[in-house]
Length: 408
Image (cartoon, rainbow, N blue to C red; front, side):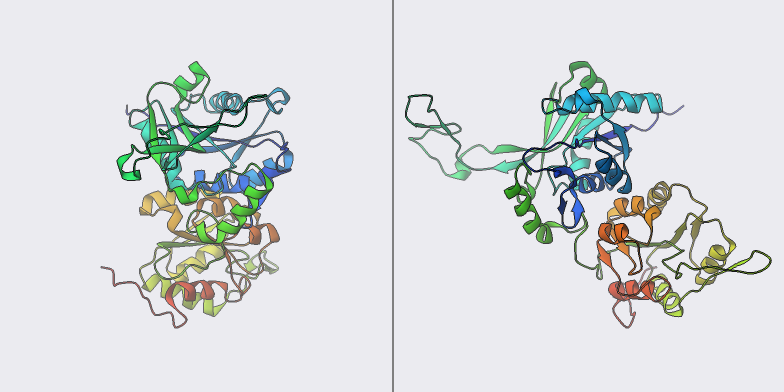
């Protein structure tokens, strides 16, 4: 019997109390709550098995579940100002083992306060532990000269060089590289972390990340800076304002009811359902199909009309699916497609877990407001009225002529 695949649990501690920034973990950056951004980074990581948000706040729990995470209620003794992140992660690790009957091979501590964490960062620390390190941490190259003020009580201020000799200041290229711990993501062997109960032990791997993305939100000024930077730094990693264009997307997955239809149903005397679709949407799907872009219809409804529409469009369909996000992730694995390169179009709450997984979550204009807020782009056309045709025009141009090279 083959050994089971490594189980990687990402834990995001997100308690409700915050003195520096009240309601911090629900504060929006790029139109998305910080807790949802952290969930998105973990769920789009290839190596993560499950994302668990530990919180004492019902509103945070709701936002986390909408983003596709599992939640665990944090006990009051672990929710105060003095409670450590390690304590929350240990509690989550025990809860996860009770649910799955198996200790996670790797446990991650991911912080909501780092809004520009990427899926690559998450995979980087995970891979380091899977490849033999005991722990791993995201770190950014740092070339600054550090000083410490030695003033104490009546002693006047006096600066002391920490990582340099104040009398000798070599050029950057002549100094050893320093790395700054970003505070964004940590990975630990599950058994080792449970034994020592803190995040660093054994051999620690330093996983380099982009210094431009390093920002920890501790006060209102940090939050303001993050909001100013989001339009520049939000690309495939988190929802933003830009519509996808040619070359941004490798696959398109479409919800059915309310996305390809106007969300109304006609039922005849025999109980048979009829829905209204848009010819322009069919044209757009045909153009995407002819361009060689993998397509899928993904629906929770088990309905002959969905099958009939998929057959007419000549694209595959998965319907009668309870967990659309799990079905989407499995389909991406089968197709060899990175979820961060998938456009997922939807309209209702059951699409939100897929929004958290896909790199390009798109809401149709008629989508419910929470779905519109979670989307990276919103069509101008409503569902069943040309929204899919509009999406096709983003990727192929208004004349729907493929800019992609011919595929064999």
